[in-house]
Amino acid sequence: MAERYNIHSQIEHLQSKYIGTGHADSTQWEWVTNHHRDSYASYVGHHDLLSYFSVIENESKARIKFNYMEKMLQPCGPPPERPEE
Image (tube, rainbow, N blue to C red; front, side, top):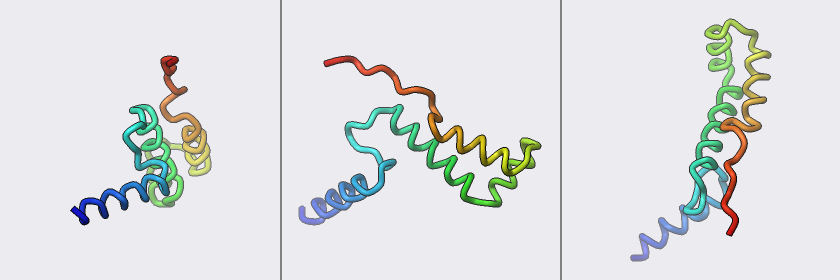
């Protein structure tokens, strides 16, 4: 039982430290948005991936980086409307 509590407390610590890990109250839109933002941040941060994408899209690395940085703002569009309680 103590081991189960330890794992649960570690998960709670990770969820409080890192936004994208999700929790029971996160919506599908929030999870997908965090996933897309993390992916774009990884693409921009890794020079080799950025070079690969620039060759594929036949654009400069700076243009690809700019486009990905813009996509990080709202990668999945505006948030869905929440029903009022």
